[in-house]
Amino acid sequence: MTGRLDAIRQQGGRLVDWLTQPHARVAGEQNRRTARFVACVTLATALIVLILYLVLAPRVPHSTDRVLAITMALAFTLYGLSRTPYYAVSQHSLAGLVLLMGILVTAFNPSSQTLVVLVFPMYISSVLHRFRSVVFWVTVCFISAFLMERFLPGQWDANDWTIYYLIALAAGFLVNKFLLTRSDSQLAQRTRQLADSEARYRMLADNAQDVIWTIDLNGHFTYISPAVEALRGYTPQEVMRQSLADAFTAGSLETIQRELRQVKQQQSEHADLKGKHNRLEIEQPRKDGSTVWTELITSPMLDQYQDISGLLGVTRDITDRRTAEQRALEVAVEQKKRQLLEEFIGHASHDFKTPLSVLKLQPYLQTRQLGILTDSLRKLRAAPPGVEPASYMTWLAGADGALTALGKSVDNLDQNTLRLERLVNSLLEMTMLDQKTQFSFAWCDVNSIVGDVVNYCQPLAENKSIVLRFVPMPDLPKVILAPGEFSRAMQCLLDNAVMYTPDAGRITVQIGQQGTFVSIEISDTGIGIPANDQPYIFDRFYRVDKARRMNTGGSGLGLAIVRRVIEAHGGTICVTSEVDKGSTFCVLLPLLTRMPNDAVDAESETGSGIPVK
Image 1 (cartoon, rainbow, N blue to C red):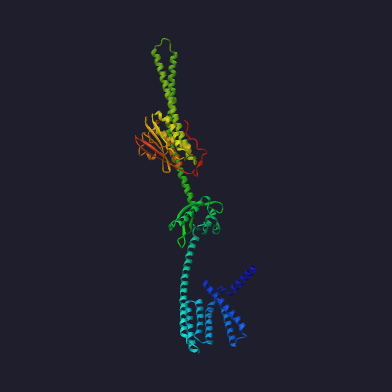
Image 2 (cartoon, rainbow, N blue to C red; image 1 turned 60 degrees about the horizontal axis):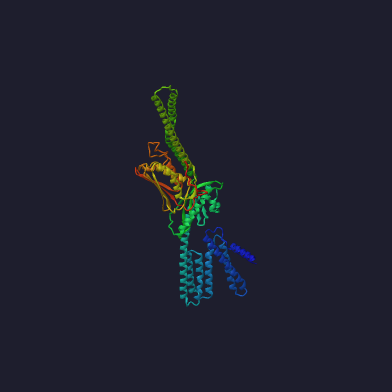
């Protein structure tokens, strides 16, 4: 039953629409609404009069019957005109018809009360016509009232009150029409301005090479310019149906979501966001399965109440720029590699040349000393009986000198071999650290690791009568470390302290805490570092000992390795030193609460990584 009622209601609505639909040549929404209103009024009037005519025709006088017929004919005529492009004629005719009906009513009963029917034509004109037309029909109504008072006999005693009443209503109609006309004019002007502004901005957005888009606070696209098709291969309609996960790659999605969260937080904090924008570089998927790098400039969108309604963004293709930057980076890396290679060749060739020259000379010297020793032994064996003892002593002294020289030569070979080994090991370690992108981290006790390094270096200090003192910090929390690499870095610092501290000196290793960092200070009473050399001592191949003597000059890579290891832990290293008074190296390590995202967690926390010589 309900379905049949809905069907009947829909059919009735279609019938009314068909009976009152304005002509296609009637332009403007306001004009079409007016034409439809006139059609409804005239059609309803004609139907009502038709019903009255059918019901009252047998009972009323012939004159009344004729009036109903004329009224019905006029109503159908006006209805027909309202469905044509000349609907304005029907508007004026409708007001005139209402006025005529008022005059006829007054003619049948001439009195001041019947003049009130003149309100209806004034009302009809105020609804349908413009302000000047309303003034015209108000004037016609008052003239009609004056003429009826003069020429129609009847009771006009209270006419003054009726005229004042009509004047008040007419003034109300005129003021209302004036305000409505003014409001409609302003609204139309603002609508045109808004439409022109929207058309201009849409033209700019639709023809811009950059993609312009908006999203609401829920992450749904509300607008996307056509340039997106050239950028990503999707049409604007396809992008509008995409979610943020479809519009951005997994690596870039978190960036956009974080941007939306920040905007929501700033809105809740009532922050001033006017003129603020962010610049992001993100990766977006294309329709063919590839990706494109884009630059996003985002800014909050504010509504009329200055509340944030979403994000406005401009997307630009930066694939060429990133390609150029990547090529420039590759060129810079190659130049840096070549520079390092040149530095390596310059420094390493000198470092290798000295021990190699010594090693090259030693076979000649050893051959010569062996010849002296062999000659002395031959003379001793071939000496006849009766040779003087002085000759024996001379030959034995020659053999003893040759043996001593051979011993020194062997020691020299051993020292230069060890130096070459240390240099090669340093180069290999630096190379491995450069190539290593991840370390095996674990929760470690700094006191334990540094204590093991101090114990390992204790014999080296005792050989030089150096007092090596270790001051741990009780209750120090564990730190995330790569134990092997960190131990070698600490050993390198202690080896340098022992090497450059004179005999009977002092070295102190102290563990402490500075805020959210663990500090490790290694202080010595050594020869110190000049102030102009201190900024460069952590550079590769840089050495304070410009003479590069074998007994003091190292490979120039030790402190560079230390800095590389400390920075891999997120820490820093610095030095304070004074010549002939000593140096202090300070290492700061962060107290992290969780393992770094790019770290490789070690399977155990044991093992200090101290190398065995």
